[in-house]
Image (cartoon, rainbow, N blue to C red; front, side):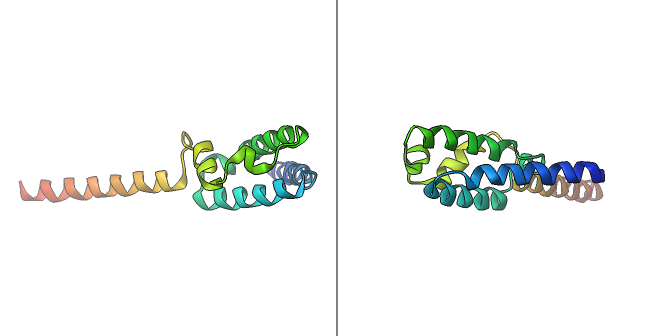
Length: 116
């Protein structure tokens, strides 16, 4: 990653957060919780720009303009809303699980090769 890429990334993030701050207060609160949740759950695509988060802001902007309350959009189970958004995304937990499975398989193969 070049310095230019980092600068562009920061500009993109600042512009993104400005959009969040322009949302109604209830949307901002829920957005911040969604962001925290997604950063903990760790969909890999979050490290590739603001795409997923920008999509959430797009949705929120449109529904806020229609006068909907944020929980009308997400439902009362915001974590389930998040899980649904990333159900087809690869997470860091998935990558870790795969690496553990590979290590176990290698170790088991070595152990069975020694007993032959």
